[in-house]
Every structure is written in structure tokens, then in C-alpha cells.
Image (cartoon, rainbow, N blue to C red; front, side, top):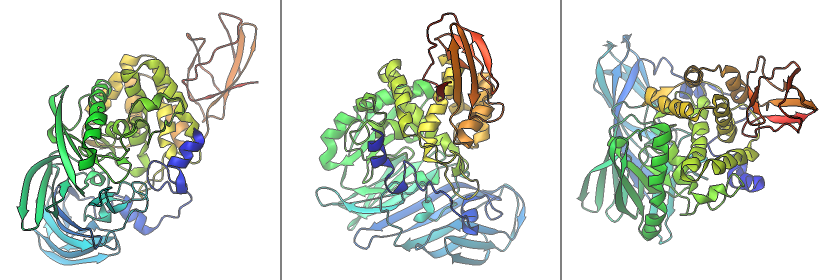
Length: 542
């Protein structure tokens, strides 16, 4: 199964996410893209009001984005950085304040103001844009637009841009730490025989001549890489889910020939929502509804508009990533990408270096879903099975301030770390309340890894700092060396960070607290000691 996993997921050195770059030399441009620079730190985006019109034949797009923002500190004659990656062009730039100069240089638009600003003031910058955007070679991993045909030959268009950034096509403040607090209005302009599907709710449809404009509204904060237009020969069906906050609208947009398959496969949505609301709390975007959209690539966690491309198969394209058979009982993309509504879309990392907050918890959401949908034995089997794909190549946490993701191990190893922490807490009700608390206390917020780490330690009443350091910041797997003579167990940790603290339960009930020094303990029986493989550690008999 490991070879199959590598074939599916690690082709061309790419894993689930995008651009797991190793040994890269970072440039000034990387810092401008990934840091909260002096060109970004004085203004806070409040809303994007945008339009996009793709041209299928020319593989081009054009549109407009009005960026509404609030000044968050006093500043004189500042320069605003708007991100728009080459080869896209800014055709016209205007603002609700006097501009002394504006220019596009490389992947950035620089707008120099001719005035002083006071904290609390509100303004807009308007950018008309056009061009032939980067075309994805292997969406969603490499990022870019997709211009393709469905199986009936109809045009089918979308974009995936989590790693490379929304500015690959849309002029934005393209940094994870600043989401538009008041959401987005997106107009998708299509030929009248096609349908434009966006995030949130459809609030208007207008046909003029041979074109139709679909207007979608998101009321909640949204990460820029989730703002995605989809254009194709879509049909729609709806349902509702009675959840923790009342009635949640379910909205499904699929290619016309997939309608019957979708009605069957998407029956997994309600059990998924039921499980995740149990573990994580209420779905975070009731105001914007829950949506699945047929996508010309495998899938992505676009907020309130989850991209679906798993070919209406259970597992990951019909395969089980755990190698246990458990993962064939449910549709990987429905479960995993929807789990991101809580971890990635509700709780968003401020910096891509901390992307494990998205992927580790969401990979673990598969385990939690399995536990509710099937049983705990199957969930534990799945949790252990996914470890076969851990590479331990580079640390999970990347480099800060340069849009750098860490190892793809953020998925499997991140989930394995969380499963290990759960064993130490040894109280599933408390563990569940921590997960729900995360989604409540960091509701619609951007976070750092330190905030998440400290929160878990505080709520658990256990110092997990060395555990986080071990699994997130090194590639070393903790090793528990041991020997047994009769009912005496001798043990110690090796391959660990300094002062590593991870108590381990043995023989189903007895807890030991290994250190790097040899210790001994008396067992309750002389039969060979039984170790719990739910911990992501190596057991080595010496």
C-alpha cells in the first residue's frame, strides 16, 4: 500500500499539499509574499467585491476587485502592496484616496498614497485586471487555472491556488493572516449555456445577451485561496441538515451527467457533518451554507464550496491510504476536504509554515469520523495504518515569512502526533472538549502554532511542549528501548529532544514515564510486556 500511496500522492515529488520545497534559497520576493511587511501591516482587509470572466478559447480571464479595508495604525504617505502574479496585468488602479503613484512590478502592485491616514479610517482600492493566468499542470498540487472539457466536450474551468496564492489570478492582499472580515461578493460571468458556481450563497442571476452573471456572497471571513470560481455545465440539487445551530442548507452543484451518482454518493455528507459537529462543534459557516462542487481536479477545501473530484468512489480514488481496508468505507474527499471547514477555514494558520494546523487535524478528522461512522477499533486501525506513508524527510514546520510549507508529513505524522497526545490525555471526553474548544475559542481566527500548542497543553493540564518539539520540529521518531527479566522492565528513551516527556501506558493499564536515563519498574506479571501501538514511537528490545 505504501508504494501505491507514493504512486498516487508523491509523483514528481509532490504530496497532498503544494510545493514542499527542500533546500530552497529564499529571495526578497519570497519575503514580500510571505511576511507582514511595512506595506501590509497598517491596513486590514474588510471585504472583496470582485468579478471574473474567463475566456475558454483564449485561456484568459478578466475582471475587477474592489478591496475595502480599514487603517489599523496612523501612517503618513504609505505604500500599499497588492499582490498580482505575472503574467496577469493590472489594467486600471483607482482608490478612494489620492494616489501619488502606482505601478506593477513583477508579482506586485505598488500604490503610493498622497495623504496621511488615521487608525479607524476606511477606504477602498479598485483594481481592474486581465491576462492569461498560470495554467496548472497537475492541479491542485502545483496551482493554477484549469481549462478543460467535461466528458461531453463542454468547457469546464476552475482554479486551485492554496500553495501558490490567490494572486495567481486575483489582485488581493495575499497573506494568510489577513482574511476579509466581512466576506466576499463574487460575480462570475459565463456564456449563457454554462453555470458559474462560487463560495457562499447564490444571491442573483442575470442574463444579458449571450452572457449570464452569477453573483455569490460569503458573509464570513474567508482565506483568499478559498475564493474559487467554477464554470461548467452544472446542475443543482439541495438538501438540509439539522445540526447544532439549526438548519444547515446543503447545496450540490455537479456536472449534468453526474446527477444520479452524486445523489447517491453525497448521502455521506450528513453522517460526516454529524460526526464532525460531535467532535469539533457546529459547522462554522451556517450563514454561507455547505456546498460540494464537481471539480476538474481531485479536491480542495474551498470554504463553503468544497471541490469534489474523487470520481464518485469510496477511498482515495478507490484506494485506501491506510492499507487496512477501513478507508474504503467512505469517500476520502468528502470527509477530508470537509474536515478542513473546521481546521483551515475556521481556524487558519497565519503563516504557511504552520500548515500542520490545517492538515494534521484534518487528517485526524478521518480517524474521528471513522470512530463515529464505524467503531473505535476500525478508527485505531486506520490511525496506525496511515503511518506507513510518513517519510520523516524534513520537519513539519517550515520557514516563516517566506510562504514555505514544511514536510508533507504534516498529514500522516501530524495526525499520528495528535493520536499520541490523545493516548496521554486518556480521557476522550476531555479530548473532545479540547477539539471543540479550539473551534470555539479560535472561531473565524488566524492562529500561530504556539497558540494551538499552548491551548492544548493548558486545557489538557499536561505540558506537551516537548512532544510538539519532537514531532513538529525534528524528523526523529522517539524510541523506547527496553529489556525484561521476569516481572522487571528496564527502559529508556533514545532519539528524542532534550527533556522529552511522553508517558506511555503498558499492559493496558500501567503508566511509565521514560527519560533518557535507564529506569526499572515492576510489572504485575512476568509475561512479555504489551505495548500500545497507538503511540507513534518505536519500541526496541535491547
